[in-house]
Image (cartoon, rainbow, N blue to C red; front, side, top):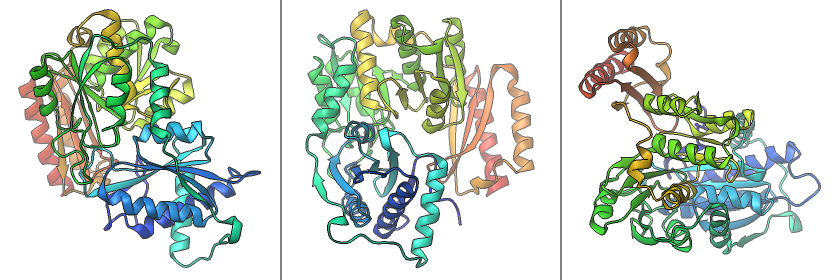
Length: 452
């Protein structure tokens, strides 16, 4: 039986893989593990629970709230808000636990549960393992102490969450956005209200697309995984830039005035230089991942900023930042962490800071993003293979060695199992796009042959 927790919580098809019973059981287990760890010592425990607009989030939220309250935890139900908003409110309200129901950029039938510790930080792997073990023990019939009477948790809605979160975001901005016209794509997700509200209050003229969630249309043709509508809207309205979020708004991609994509590496580069100028880029270092474009690494070193790489996953970026005291890190996919102001990737904050840099410098986004040149990069997701054998397959290792020999020092290869989806990701970077495509195609075929 595989581990329930992936790199970003527990995910699966809602009501098939991720059921109401599982959501309730995991919530009870989380309450018990945190109580045993001393988190609740000396006070009545409290949790913040939020979700994205997926239809399944409605019943899963009910199950999580029921599980926590039955274990004696008071619950603040904040409704539909971004993942970083739930993390922020967990810290701001002094809660012992935060729970976010979302499958981020995954399609609508999926959903997920992500737990935050006190302060809004992601739970340590060791605590997740203990939660999973406790959940399995309870599911097999092991009894647990159930509070009664006044000992059960109380539940109330917390409607002030959106305003408190937006006020926090505006308090972080170094300057206003007056004079900028910006298109916001909310992916019909958790940012549909928050992001336009924040940008408008910051002074921008805002045009919105993908901001009418109905529970079924999240990530459907809009958002950071579908940039074409944003490209078209930016050009149509003559906007200075566009911002695209994913379903739970913990990431941000952008397009410039010509409709050209500005990815997470470029955003990170722009913010790194802005923070260095402001004296807030601690150790003159920015944290990326092994998926970061080689052009990002070259540009940062040219500009006197040291790039550090981690494994793929914003949790690993965050761990590196916290361990060494770095202030900025992120991923090519648009997860950007500004640790002085957020405990997780925050798409709205990232977009605001990017727009603030445009406003402060008077330069176009294309000009700012031009600090780095992206080397051609091809990514292929190979499905229906045994992703657990990526590291142990001799046949695959030989194919990778051949590819690396062909690319030499002008490119690189990365094969990795996804932490959030049942796929193996094949990434090839080369100076020439045709070579990158050719090598990536051969490697994808090798993955199918070796792991199929």
